[in-house]
Length: 297
Ligand SMILES: Cc1cc2nc3c(=O)[nH]c(=O)nc-3n(C[C@H](O)[C@H](O)[C@H](O)COP(=O)(O)OP(=O)(O)OC[C@H]3O[C@@H](n4cnc5c(N)ncnc54)[C@H](O)[C@@H]3O)c2cc1C
Image (cartoon, rainbow, N blue to C red; front, side):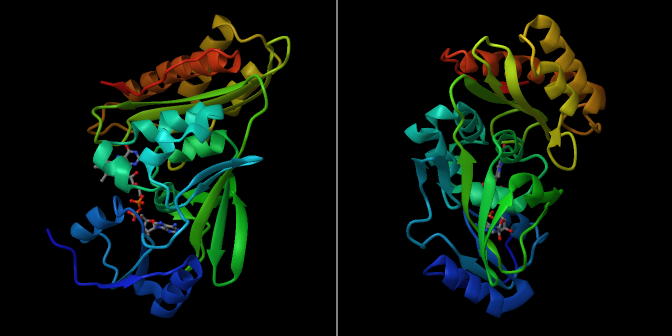
């Protein structure tokens, strides 16, 4: 199906994009990779009369590491996966490299993904687990918004009208830190059935100093699993703790039965992902090199 008629506008800079969207009003949308917006327009679930294209704005696609990791909003998933700068945060590579298929990864952007706030998207649990900040530019100027305050609900963010995401900033972890992100997918080009992000920091004696655990997909937004974090903190992480984390994740999951599987299947899957993700994060925090990829079933 073809989208409804729309006018196409090119932005020369982020401030130009904000000015254009402010003038065009509610019937206008930013266009990034088009991997969510264009399919929705083809289905006529979204019918903007104007698109303001961000793709030709220079200096909006980058991964830089200076004090913190800074990712330009227009950076494609594939470029994040390929960046050497994410090596201190391998959880970012886990996420970017596993999104859909190469076509989607080479077009879709991290800014567009977060702006879309699809509950089944991969970035939200990862950016929550790593404590990211979303930098924005709107008619009222620049803002820095903690990711936990940015994603408000399914498909709902803190973005004001005509405000855009310019950059994602992620604090670089110190030594003895490691994270992992694993999703269960039916096949590469589809969204996950369940996903789990873990970021751990260990003390010198290898007890757990800090832990962040987020469950993706099985709620309207990614869900922080406080009970799992409690189990890990101040403990040597062994099989007993990992088993308790598995239980805490299964307890908090709110799956519904659909074409991706029954609620019970997804709950069991979330528990299994928690076990694999914590084990991988722990090894990385101990300095081991661990390859992580999504599970397909
Ligand atoms: C077949 C297929 C499979 C997919 N599978 C997955 C998957 O497994 N996991 C996953 O996470 N994603 C998946 N996606 C989505 C993909 O990751 C998209 O990249 C993402 O959802 C949107 O990014 P985009 O750059 O394409 O944004 P667009 O589609 O261009 O825009 C999406 C929305 O965000 C707004 N927007 C875009 N950029 C900005 C900005 N900088 N500031 C403010 N608003 C902005 C737009 O106006 C629009 O409303 C899939 C997509 C397809 C087509």
